[in-house]
Image (cartoon, rainbow, N blue to C red; front, top):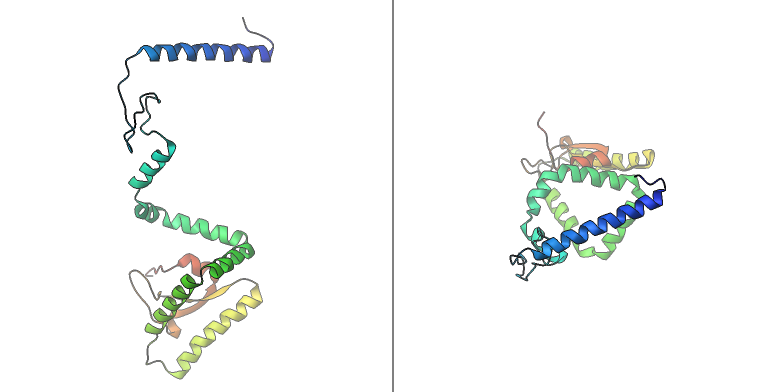
Length: 196
């Protein structure tokens, strides 16, 4: 017979479930138990659930971290992660810039190394045969980017069409390899180069 009062129904259901679980527990206690051991440390885990393989969550996490191939995971998800990172960065750009500035202040050595590396790459890829006019055109590209940033209110970058440090190909730091584009597009492009 169904009970009309919802609270009575719930309490009856709880009592039935508790009695059922207690009976099952007694049945399992009577069965012979095969000894089982933690995969990581070898501690006896026979008293744990039938599908348990570890003595603790910490051991489970450590074991799965040891088995993971982080490089392969990153390679599979790199485009998605980069897109998500850009969305997060541009969702609150002022806060993102403040965090980046704090990171630079906390780790000046790392940022100095990265800046020096980039400067050296640019110097290596700037040919000695460029004329004064061509060097002036390069400096004009950077001033155009600066003016556009002030005009539009968001960052503009000087992008190398063929990247200086691309995986498949490396370009030169010359006027005909430069374009002024929005910073978001430049960051999204990364070091990729698509042949038209």
